[in-house]
Image (cartoon, rainbow, N blue to C red; front, side, top):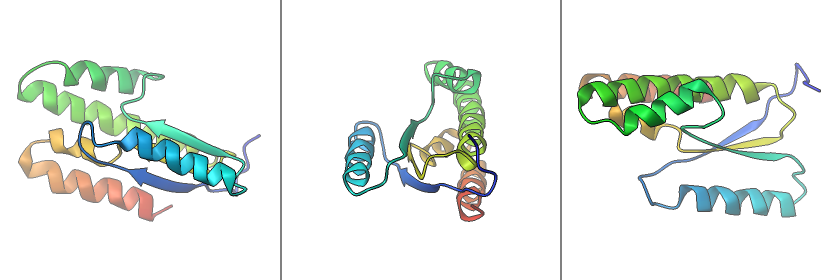
Length: 125
């Protein structure tokens, strides 16, 4: 059941490809579970359970600026969808594996905007 007054604690694990994000997220989740946090969810992006994540993944596999821009846009929608979905969910902790790094695919002139936008989404929580 969704509690309208509950807000989970978000943890972000971000880094380049092959840097161990998923491994660290699993270790954090295991640590929390072993220390009386009964409800921990790991959320990786791009996610495969929604159209935004699937489209982001497809766009990442294409070459060129257009593909990177589409990937960044769909990635952003995927992350926003996750924030909305889990903002008032029963989990005590949500660990995001790969959150802000997706803005790197934006054109250089938009990278800081994207980074600031997603940072503020977390701070507003």
